[in-house]
Length: 337
Ligand SMILES: [Zn+2]
Image (cartoon, rainbow, N blue to C red; front, top):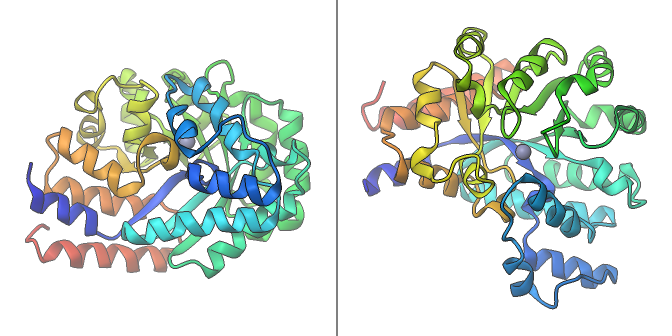
Protein backbone atom coordinates (compact mmCIF):
# COMPACT_ATOMS: atom_id res chain seq x y z
CA UNK A 1 0.00 0.00 0.00
CA UNK A 2 1.13 3.51 -0.83
CA UNK A 3 1.85 4.91 2.63
CA UNK A 4 2.46 8.39 1.26
CA UNK A 5 -1.04 8.43 -0.23
CA UNK A 6 -2.54 7.32 3.08
CA UNK A 7 -0.62 10.07 4.83
CA UNK A 8 -1.98 12.65 2.36
CA UNK A 9 -5.55 11.39 2.79
CA UNK A 10 -5.33 11.46 6.58
CA UNK A 11 -3.93 14.97 6.68
CA UNK A 12 -6.11 16.58 4.02
CA UNK A 13 -8.69 19.16 5.12
CA UNK A 14 -12.16 17.61 5.00
CA UNK A 15 -15.77 17.90 6.11
CA UNK A 16 -17.94 15.23 7.67
CA UNK A 17 -21.62 15.24 6.67
CA UNK A 18 -22.96 11.95 8.03
CA UNK A 19 -22.25 11.35 11.71
CA UNK A 20 -24.89 10.41 14.29
CA UNK A 21 -23.65 11.92 17.51
CA UNK A 22 -25.20 9.11 19.58
CA UNK A 23 -23.15 6.72 17.42
CA UNK A 24 -19.93 8.34 18.64
CA UNK A 25 -20.60 7.15 22.18
CA UNK A 26 -17.64 4.94 23.11
CA UNK A 27 -18.15 2.09 25.62
CA UNK A 28 -15.82 3.87 28.08
CA UNK A 29 -18.03 6.98 28.06
CA UNK A 30 -21.18 4.86 28.24
CA UNK A 31 -19.85 3.30 31.47
CA UNK A 32 -18.71 6.66 32.87
CA UNK A 33 -22.12 8.24 32.21
CA UNK A 34 -23.96 5.18 33.56
CA UNK A 35 -22.05 5.54 36.81
CA UNK A 36 -22.55 9.32 36.97
CA UNK A 37 -26.30 8.95 36.37
CA UNK A 38 -26.90 5.74 38.33
CA UNK A 39 -28.08 3.85 35.23
CA UNK A 40 -27.79 0.05 35.38
CA UNK A 41 -26.33 -1.53 32.23
CA UNK A 42 -26.86 -5.09 31.06
CA UNK A 43 -23.10 -5.49 30.61
CA UNK A 44 -20.64 -6.06 33.49
CA UNK A 45 -17.78 -4.04 31.95
CA UNK A 46 -16.44 -2.16 28.93
CA UNK A 47 -15.04 -5.34 27.34
CA UNK A 48 -18.38 -7.14 27.56
CA UNK A 49 -20.12 -4.18 25.95
CA UNK A 50 -17.56 -4.00 23.13
CA UNK A 51 -17.97 -7.75 22.58
CA UNK A 52 -21.71 -7.19 22.14
CA UNK A 53 -21.04 -5.02 19.09
CA UNK A 54 -21.38 -8.18 17.01
CA UNK A 55 -24.36 -7.08 14.97
CA UNK A 56 -25.00 -8.25 11.44
CA UNK A 57 -27.60 -5.89 10.01
CA UNK A 58 -29.19 -2.52 10.60
CA UNK A 59 -31.78 -3.75 13.09
CA UNK A 60 -29.40 -5.70 15.34
CA UNK A 61 -27.13 -2.63 15.38
CA UNK A 62 -30.02 -0.30 16.25
CA UNK A 63 -30.97 -2.51 19.21
CA UNK A 64 -27.60 -2.01 20.91
CA UNK A 65 -27.35 1.60 19.75
CA UNK A 66 -30.52 2.50 21.67
CA UNK A 67 -29.29 0.57 24.73
CA UNK A 68 -26.08 2.68 24.70
CA UNK A 69 -28.02 5.92 24.40
CA UNK A 70 -29.96 5.08 27.58
CA UNK A 71 -27.16 6.59 29.73
CA UNK A 72 -27.71 10.07 28.23
CA UNK A 73 -29.92 11.95 30.66
CA UNK A 74 -28.53 15.43 31.39
CA UNK A 75 -27.48 18.41 29.29
CA UNK A 76 -23.90 17.80 30.41
CA UNK A 77 -24.02 14.21 29.07
CA UNK A 78 -24.86 15.49 25.58
CA UNK A 79 -22.14 18.09 25.88
CA UNK A 80 -19.53 15.50 26.93
CA UNK A 81 -20.48 13.12 24.12
CA UNK A 82 -20.28 15.88 21.51
CA UNK A 83 -17.02 17.31 22.84
CA UNK A 84 -15.43 13.84 22.64
CA UNK A 85 -16.48 13.48 18.99
CA UNK A 86 -15.27 16.97 18.05
CA UNK A 87 -11.84 16.23 19.53
CA UNK A 88 -11.63 13.11 17.34
CA UNK A 89 -12.79 15.10 14.31
CA UNK A 90 -10.10 17.70 14.90
CA UNK A 91 -7.46 14.98 15.10
CA UNK A 92 -8.68 13.67 11.70
CA UNK A 93 -8.24 17.15 10.12
CA UNK A 94 -11.98 17.68 9.87
CA UNK A 95 -12.58 21.40 9.32
CA UNK A 96 -16.37 21.29 9.35
CA UNK A 97 -18.96 18.75 10.47
CA UNK A 98 -22.75 18.58 10.18
CA UNK A 99 -23.89 16.49 13.13
CA UNK A 100 -27.05 14.36 13.20
CA UNK A 101 -28.90 13.86 16.47
CA UNK A 102 -32.01 11.80 17.27
CA UNK A 103 -34.21 13.71 19.76
CA UNK A 104 -36.87 10.99 19.87
CA UNK A 105 -34.35 8.50 21.27
CA UNK A 106 -34.10 10.78 24.30
CA UNK A 107 -37.51 12.43 24.64
CA UNK A 108 -39.09 8.94 24.70
CA UNK A 109 -37.08 8.39 27.91
CA UNK A 110 -38.30 11.64 29.44
CA UNK A 111 -35.25 13.77 28.62
CA UNK A 112 -36.32 17.35 27.72
CA UNK A 113 -35.53 18.16 24.07
CA UNK A 114 -33.99 21.46 25.21
CA UNK A 115 -31.37 19.60 27.25
CA UNK A 116 -30.49 17.45 24.22
CA UNK A 117 -30.13 20.38 21.82
CA UNK A 118 -28.42 22.75 24.27
CA UNK A 119 -25.84 20.18 25.35
CA UNK A 120 -24.86 19.29 21.79
CA UNK A 121 -24.97 22.89 20.62
CA UNK A 122 -22.86 24.20 23.52
CA UNK A 123 -20.11 21.71 22.67
CA UNK A 124 -20.30 22.76 18.99
CA UNK A 125 -19.92 26.41 19.89
CA UNK A 126 -16.90 25.73 22.06
CA UNK A 127 -15.54 23.02 19.77
CA UNK A 128 -12.26 23.02 17.92
CA UNK A 129 -13.88 22.69 14.46
CA UNK A 130 -16.83 24.30 12.67
CA UNK A 131 -19.97 22.31 13.53
CA UNK A 132 -23.71 22.59 12.81
CA UNK A 133 -26.71 20.43 13.76
CA UNK A 134 -29.20 18.40 11.75
CA UNK A 135 -32.15 16.97 13.68
CA UNK A 136 -33.21 13.51 12.49
CA UNK A 137 -36.61 11.86 12.74
CA UNK A 138 -36.72 8.14 13.52
CA UNK A 139 -38.47 6.57 10.56
CA UNK A 140 -39.65 3.46 12.42
CA UNK A 141 -41.88 5.78 14.45
CA UNK A 142 -45.01 7.49 13.09
CA UNK A 143 -45.16 10.76 11.19
CA UNK A 144 -47.33 12.12 14.02
CA UNK A 145 -44.43 11.51 16.40
CA UNK A 146 -42.09 13.34 14.00
CA UNK A 147 -44.53 16.28 13.75
CA UNK A 148 -44.76 16.49 17.55
CA UNK A 149 -40.95 16.41 17.74
CA UNK A 150 -40.72 19.24 15.24
CA UNK A 151 -43.18 21.29 17.32
CA UNK A 152 -41.15 20.63 20.46
CA UNK A 153 -37.97 21.72 18.66
CA UNK A 154 -39.39 25.00 17.32
CA UNK A 155 -38.09 27.09 20.26
CA UNK A 156 -34.60 25.92 19.23
CA UNK A 157 -35.12 26.45 15.49
CA UNK A 158 -32.10 28.77 15.26
CA UNK A 159 -29.77 26.13 16.72
CA UNK A 160 -30.34 23.63 13.90
CA UNK A 161 -29.68 24.01 10.18
CA UNK A 162 -31.74 21.10 8.87
CA UNK A 163 -33.59 17.85 9.38
CA UNK A 164 -32.94 14.27 8.32
CA UNK A 165 -34.53 10.83 8.40
CA UNK A 166 -32.74 7.84 9.93
CA UNK A 167 -33.16 4.46 11.71
CA UNK A 168 -34.72 1.34 10.15
CA UNK A 169 -35.07 1.99 6.42
CA UNK A 170 -36.81 -1.06 4.99
CA UNK A 171 -40.59 -0.81 5.24
CA UNK A 172 -40.44 2.89 6.12
CA UNK A 173 -40.22 4.72 2.76
CA UNK A 174 -39.48 8.45 2.67
CA UNK A 175 -43.03 9.33 1.56
CA UNK A 176 -44.26 8.27 5.02
CA UNK A 177 -42.83 11.62 6.17
CA UNK A 178 -44.13 13.87 3.37
CA UNK A 179 -46.06 16.27 5.64
CA UNK A 180 -43.35 16.81 8.23
CA UNK A 181 -40.72 17.45 5.55
CA UNK A 182 -43.08 19.92 3.81
CA UNK A 183 -43.37 21.83 7.10
CA UNK A 184 -39.60 21.79 7.58
CA UNK A 185 -39.18 23.15 4.06
CA UNK A 186 -41.52 26.02 4.90
CA UNK A 187 -39.41 26.72 7.97
CA UNK A 188 -36.36 27.12 5.74
CA UNK A 189 -34.56 24.08 7.11
CA UNK A 190 -32.16 22.07 4.95
CA UNK A 191 -33.47 18.60 4.12
CA UNK A 192 -31.63 15.27 3.95
CA UNK A 193 -32.71 11.64 4.29
CA UNK A 194 -31.16 8.20 4.55
CA UNK A 195 -32.12 6.26 1.41
CA UNK A 196 -30.74 3.44 -0.70
CA UNK A 197 -28.67 1.85 2.07
CA UNK A 198 -30.72 -1.27 2.85
CA UNK A 199 -33.76 0.11 1.09
CA UNK A 200 -34.23 0.05 -2.70
CA UNK A 201 -33.24 2.78 -5.21
CA UNK A 202 -36.94 3.76 -5.34
CA UNK A 203 -36.51 5.24 -1.84
CA UNK A 204 -33.86 7.60 -3.26
CA UNK A 205 -36.33 8.70 -5.89
CA UNK A 206 -39.15 9.42 -3.43
CA UNK A 207 -36.74 11.14 -1.02
CA UNK A 208 -35.94 13.52 -3.90
CA UNK A 209 -39.43 13.86 -5.39
CA UNK A 210 -41.66 13.74 -2.31
CA UNK A 211 -39.44 14.99 0.52
CA UNK A 212 -37.38 17.26 -1.78
CA UNK A 213 -34.14 16.48 0.03
CA UNK A 214 -30.93 18.23 -0.99
CA UNK A 215 -28.62 15.36 -0.08
CA UNK A 216 -29.01 11.58 0.15
CA UNK A 217 -27.45 9.81 3.13
CA UNK A 218 -25.79 6.56 1.98
CA UNK A 219 -27.47 6.16 -1.44
CA UNK A 220 -25.03 3.44 -2.50
CA UNK A 221 -27.81 1.37 -4.10
CA UNK A 222 -28.35 4.24 -6.55
CA UNK A 223 -26.18 2.41 -9.09
CA UNK A 224 -28.78 -0.37 -9.42
CA UNK A 225 -30.89 2.08 -11.43
CA UNK A 226 -29.06 3.62 -14.41
CA UNK A 227 -31.66 6.33 -15.06
CA UNK A 228 -31.66 7.34 -11.39
CA UNK A 229 -27.85 7.44 -11.36
CA UNK A 230 -27.84 9.78 -14.37
CA UNK A 231 -30.43 12.00 -12.70
CA UNK A 232 -28.60 12.19 -9.34
CA UNK A 233 -25.38 13.03 -11.20
CA UNK A 234 -27.06 15.66 -13.40
CA UNK A 235 -28.71 17.35 -10.40
CA UNK A 236 -25.49 17.29 -8.38
CA UNK A 237 -27.20 15.55 -5.46
CA UNK A 238 -24.50 14.49 -3.03
CA UNK A 239 -24.33 11.04 -1.42
CA UNK A 240 -22.91 10.77 2.09
CA UNK A 241 -21.29 7.34 1.84
CA UNK A 242 -20.11 5.50 4.97
CA UNK A 243 -17.64 2.73 3.97
CA UNK A 244 -16.99 0.99 7.32
CA UNK A 245 -20.69 1.12 8.22
CA UNK A 246 -21.56 -0.52 4.88
CA UNK A 247 -19.22 -3.42 5.60
CA UNK A 248 -20.26 -3.83 9.23
CA UNK A 249 -23.94 -3.90 8.27
CA UNK A 250 -23.25 -6.15 5.26
CA UNK A 251 -24.41 -3.74 2.56
CA UNK A 252 -21.20 -5.02 0.91
CA UNK A 253 -19.44 -8.20 2.07
CA UNK A 254 -15.92 -6.74 1.90
CA UNK A 255 -14.37 -3.33 1.32
CA UNK A 256 -12.96 -4.55 -2.01
CA UNK A 257 -16.56 -4.89 -3.20
CA UNK A 258 -17.56 -1.40 -2.08
CA UNK A 259 -18.82 0.79 -4.93
CA UNK A 260 -17.26 4.12 -3.86
CA UNK A 261 -15.05 4.25 -6.96
CA UNK A 262 -17.97 3.41 -9.27
CA UNK A 263 -20.01 6.20 -7.66
CA UNK A 264 -17.21 8.67 -8.37
CA UNK A 265 -16.75 7.32 -11.91
CA UNK A 266 -20.49 7.80 -12.52
CA UNK A 267 -19.98 11.49 -11.81
CA UNK A 268 -21.79 11.46 -8.47
CA UNK A 269 -20.84 13.83 -5.66
CA UNK A 270 -19.87 11.01 -3.30
CA UNK A 271 -18.38 11.81 0.10
CA UNK A 272 -16.81 9.64 2.82
CA UNK A 273 -18.22 9.68 6.35
CA UNK A 274 -18.18 7.66 9.57
CA UNK A 275 -21.94 7.22 10.35
CA UNK A 276 -21.70 5.68 13.87
CA UNK A 277 -17.94 5.62 14.49
CA UNK A 278 -17.95 4.04 17.94
CA UNK A 279 -19.94 1.09 16.63
CA UNK A 280 -18.59 0.60 13.11
CA UNK A 281 -14.86 0.46 13.71
CA UNK A 282 -13.62 3.95 13.13
CA UNK A 283 -13.82 7.69 12.77
CA UNK A 284 -13.45 9.60 9.52
CA UNK A 285 -9.78 8.91 8.81
CA UNK A 286 -10.25 5.22 9.52
CA UNK A 287 -12.99 5.20 6.88
CA UNK A 288 -10.71 6.91 4.37
CA UNK A 289 -7.83 4.56 5.13
CA UNK A 290 -10.02 1.45 4.83
CA UNK A 291 -11.37 2.62 1.46
CA UNK A 292 -7.99 3.67 0.06
CA UNK A 293 -6.33 0.45 1.23
CA UNK A 294 -8.91 -1.77 -0.47
CA UNK A 295 -9.94 0.13 -3.60
CA UNK A 296 -7.87 1.42 -6.55
CA UNK A 297 -8.25 5.04 -5.43
CA UNK A 298 -5.48 7.54 -6.14
CA UNK A 299 -4.41 11.07 -5.37
CA UNK A 300 -7.00 12.64 -7.68
CA UNK A 301 -9.77 10.68 -5.97
CA UNK A 302 -8.54 11.96 -2.61
CA UNK A 303 -8.65 15.51 -3.94
CA UNK A 304 -12.14 14.95 -5.37
CA UNK A 305 -13.46 13.45 -2.13
CA UNK A 306 -12.05 16.33 -0.06
CA UNK A 307 -13.63 18.84 -2.45
CA UNK A 308 -16.94 16.94 -2.50
CA UNK A 309 -17.16 17.03 1.30
CA UNK A 310 -17.23 20.83 1.27
CA UNK A 311 -19.22 21.23 -1.97
CA UNK A 312 -21.98 19.05 -0.49
CA UNK A 313 -22.01 20.89 2.85
CA UNK A 314 -24.60 23.46 3.90
CA UNK A 315 -21.95 26.07 4.61
CA UNK A 316 -22.42 29.64 3.41
CA UNK A 317 -20.93 30.08 -0.09
CA UNK A 318 -18.06 32.25 1.13
CA UNK A 319 -17.04 29.84 3.87
CA UNK A 320 -17.40 26.92 1.47
CA UNK A 321 -15.08 28.59 -1.04
CA UNK A 322 -12.56 29.29 1.70
CA UNK A 323 -12.39 25.59 2.57
CA UNK A 324 -12.26 24.56 -1.11
CA UNK A 325 -9.33 26.93 -1.59
CA UNK A 326 -7.64 25.31 1.39
CA UNK A 327 -8.17 21.87 -0.15
CA UNK A 328 -6.78 22.99 -3.52
CA UNK A 329 -3.75 24.61 -1.89
CA UNK A 330 -3.09 21.43 0.08
CA UNK A 331 -3.18 19.28 -3.07
CA UNK A 332 -1.23 21.79 -5.16
CA UNK A 333 1.81 20.72 -3.16
CA UNK A 334 1.41 17.25 -4.69
CA UNK A 335 1.03 18.52 -8.28
CA UNK A 336 -2.62 17.57 -8.66
CA UNK A 337 -4.92 19.98 -10.42
ZN1 LIG B 1 -26.57 7.09 9.18
